Length: 493
Image 1: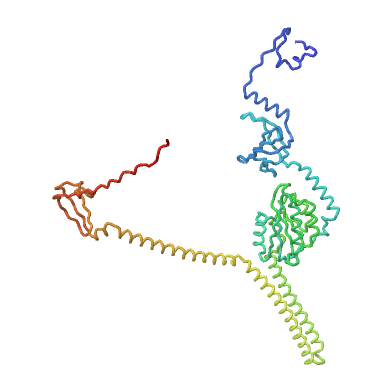
Image 2: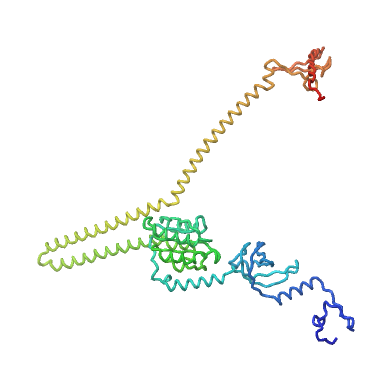
């Protein structure tokens, strides 16, 4: 059919328009599609026509099923389903949370079994991540120009710190890891925990104030190092440590500051300004504390070097004395020998006194360290806990004995009551029980006939007998109540 200029039917390929009356050729009939064929066509059209997208939206209905993430992103007018396979989700550092704003990269596709259009997500990022990177770089350039990152501004750490301030959130995993690492590395060091917010609004100011307060109190409390630690998290979770106020507090701190923030791959501005940066909280505490094994080996090596030096000094002194004695032996052998022996004795006394004083100081130092270590030894805590267990066991035993005595007394009282009201006691008081021949109790004279066989049970045996006669009791007089008094209520006229 020849195309007519301005004919909208030809422009639209005649799919939805009826042929005009003057159109000589009718439209060719369209073959029907199966549902699967149409779904395949929709899937190809979406994947080839739309393909990769970068979308920002609010997360809703987030859930994890067998490691796969399913959620939706929405704005004020629309919503789109999203899914992320487990292999991709395990590598993602960002997790979809209801109400969060995410930047999503993925492919628009059509899930044919449920007829649902969705985004197959390949990457997640918090909305505004680009702004955070720009702010981080800008602040880094500013602080670098001011000398905050210079090595010359770093304060050296003490070799054996005996008191450390741990600045972190109370009860956090980072605090637990630090205490556990300190107990196994060098338990003699005292650790003062300082609770502070490490995430959320106002956290940066709280961290800065805590550092300044600890630094001011450090001389009084004997604090030698400040540890600023926090567990892992997203870029936004750690952003409090990228604020200028925290960098200023660390740079102005006179006490050495060691940081252990997030994981090994996380780097914050606080790490760059600190005097020493550790990759994790537990590494921060172990890098700060002295190593017991290394310290013991160093002390032993120094003792060996001192012993060798003293021996060499004595040998050189003895050699000089012998040489001088040989040179002067001709003129005055006895005097030379006496003088040299006096010198040897004086030197030996001086060396002995020096060595005794040094050994005394080392012994006192070792005893002091041993006493402090003993106070923190696990056996001391175990002994205290064992004493508490024994005291609790004794108290429990006394309570159990008292309870058993009360229960026994209650049982005895119940037994005496039961014995007093039981059938045997009733029989002993002269009462008896009459039974029919079938063993059932007789409760009324009307229940047996004359000539019937009965059995009378007493306290010390039973009697078999036959009923010769029976005599019922006279019926009691029936009391007839008086009639009610006539009512005096008058009817209204």
